[in-house]
Length: 425
Ligand SMILES: Cc1cc2nc3c(=O)[nH]c(=O)nc-3n(C[C@H](O)[C@H](O)[C@H](O)COP(=O)(O)OP(=O)(O)OC[C@H]3O[C@@H](n4cnc5c(N)ncnc54)[C@H](O)[C@@H]3O)c2cc1C
Image (cartoon, rainbow, N blue to C red; front, side, top):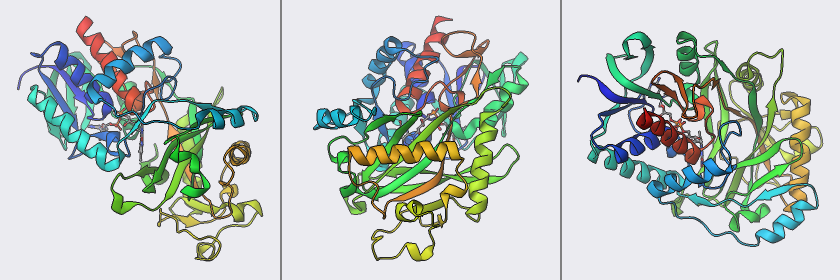
């Protein structure tokens, strides 16, 4: 098929953002998007809460208020987010401030997992109409830099520009590429925490503010809140040594038939590791593997009531007595998270739970479930050549996998920024 003006690896929001920006500026460009999955497209398939306010999702080293605002405007032009109203924000904020807790006011849209799928179909159809070609079910395996060739499991593809946006799950692929191309990088920041699940009635703020963003002392924050038809899920990861393990996550449906009146959210502590730790990813992996070991190959869950009295949860804890709702992640193992969460992290998380329970009384009800591990390995942070995330001449590394974003809208913004670099050159 000859040389492509731009080949994009990954059809997540970062890749899509780049494709739209390139095609809308130069309709004649020949663009190919490839993805190892048989369907499009990355993390837009999960819940699809979109945050449109700095600093949510913006890694501080690449973005500031001004660049974030300017790119978010462009993101919104394509995604047309239905921004949700918030109520009683000042009441919650005043209560939080008294405890040294911050509640950020964020512009949000929420489509739900099913709404996200609909959006993806529309976006892909629109790109196809503009002439972008898709090759799904094709995995990229490497790059022959001196020949401008992307290698996949099926063929060799010649490019003028290459955008690699493989998401968090493409962490290792990206690391291999960077090692082979001599792109230096560091990965010293990790978010480690729990996913909390409870009755919506015990965390009623979600009726006023869909995904409330609380910041607690000790670099702890709430993240990715889901409610009404909310479910905890597990995601499979493969460690750098090839061992499988699971981290938890959450999402919600907009479909009325799936309403369970539960809520779940992550409580994450950010750790910046310093010398001599070489890899934050390895550190996080070891914690994930350890938790899975104790859970018999699965994540662990514990009721707050058991945790408070220092007792492990067991199958019997999950009955219909006081603990009157069933965990939505059925495959999780009841156990003792305090056995596997490092002390410093657990202490910060538990303090934050207590603060949260003071701002919104209820979340520390004994029935509340804490799932562990929820781990976000944000990055291989490559050393970029310019502000457009060019890491090697004509090769751009973007999105959550490359640490230029932490969420849908910022991944999309990273794509536009890489496209700007290509258009400039
Ligand atoms: C359960 C869950 C819920 C989430 N909910 C939200 C939310 O509500 N709001 C929010 O802002 N963020 C949410 N996120 C995070 C969000 O999904 C990511 O921030 C975002 O998708 C990152 O975009 P990306 O384009 O960088 O990567 P991704 O969306 O992960 O896309 C990367 C794509 O690259 C493909 N790929 C990887 N390696 C290769 C390869 N070697 N060859 C070919 N293709 C490859 C993958 O198959 C994937 O399709 C959620 C994540 C999960 C897992």
